Image (cartoon, rainbow, N blue to C red; front, side, top):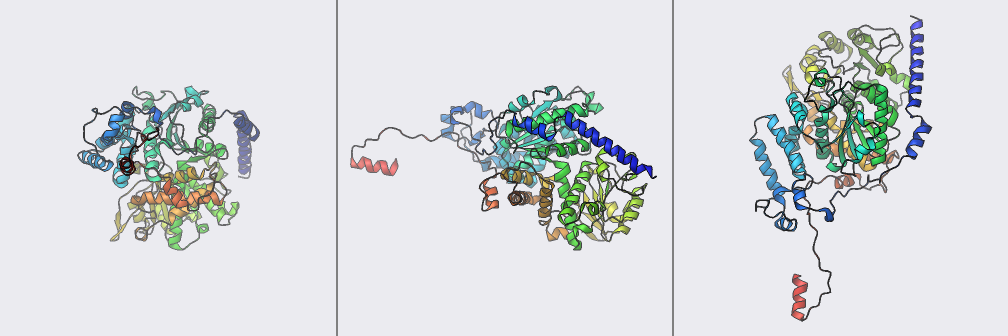
Length: 622
């Protein structure tokens, strides 16, 4: 037993040497990185550009009718139709946006299945984008779920067979060495937010490859509706490096590379070139939102690139910040300090690692040193507690290995460590057995139980089981939306931990302030602001999150919190600082109302008026 820590230390040193060698090979050392970026050719920086109107010299009526970004349908005025030479190509009636929304609403009401509604919404997004977003904004609670492809596995299959060319960018490993050229093919230069994925770890469903692209589209819709970000500022990017899903490799209808995923070394070179291409094409301010990467890759990407450019991982940081907010609310219910919590994480999913890191940052903010903070954060997997004496620790969990005797099971770990917060992110269904839940009931007067694996079929336990085996004393938080449940003649609403609470608001605040790097503290600030928005009526039902129907207000609050934090910490590049941040943010929100597509006609000749009567008439009427 005495040699085990030494072997672990030797293994850690070997891993550090290997990482150092890899860094040198990948040219990510400080000197080489600075030299490479400084000598890299840049395109014109358009980050602060907010006017996305088409130049009047490029206006063409028939082209506008067939282009979703500029098509107005029956909202083209009679004057516009004549000037643009599309008079007669549309029925004579002229409708307002409100009329069009009412007509679309009636059409949607006539559909009977989620597939029909999703297909119609996808058609609208391509045919008339401003009307599409005006419809979503008219009633987000009702219409936004219709655009969510994750609502059904059938929708994902159907969308995979649809043609979605021109809605995002697909960059394959075959494009290595030419990625800047691929990004330059995107028709809009004012991109400020890139939603990026390689489809490797989707909703606990595993490797989906390029079939994840519709989920990126759903995230863009959320950013536009809830964050007020202009659609032209957003770009969905799928990094196609193959797939390890045998079903997709054998499926001739699969639209991605039908090859196994590339090696880590080649992938790192590929992602390095992609990040440099983003700087070259859109500047260091451009926000890269990473989603559904493998936990190990997501962790490494953040470590390598967060100091160089504006990069955020949705699962590692945004979803983790929402979970952190839930813990903060629980502490306020008990009137306890955050430093009083003891966390036990089960599994190595990205959400667990991200939440553990934010907990460390939060504890440091409260004045707790690193050593004491680590004593309150423990990890466990199917083989027991993560300690240095173990030889089979996953690489992404090495940083959380503790120095103590091994504990072989989760139940024994709970009894020994006495945690009050149990976090499940293992993708192992029903891993929180009755014995585990009973142990948590004995460990804390009001245990907090997270079952974050998605979909709900893969959750570590059900809400009913959590309440039953903790005698109704727990606060239960799920990664999926769950209905209210009744226990002991009282109704409770399980919390829904979803990144939707933060992604849109944080993206808006980051872009408006002009961040070039985002520290972990920013997500702690967002978590505290989210915790302050929970309603008393929700707390009575032990729901630690605000209502989803107020998502637009929540996103505004998130944007304001991040925006003011940027100026407080000197991270903002916007100048001068707005006196009223909230008013500045509201003035910057996307407005889906139609624009006039023709310019005013005015006279440039000298006006000669013969009589006094004509002069008076001209002044009054002309």
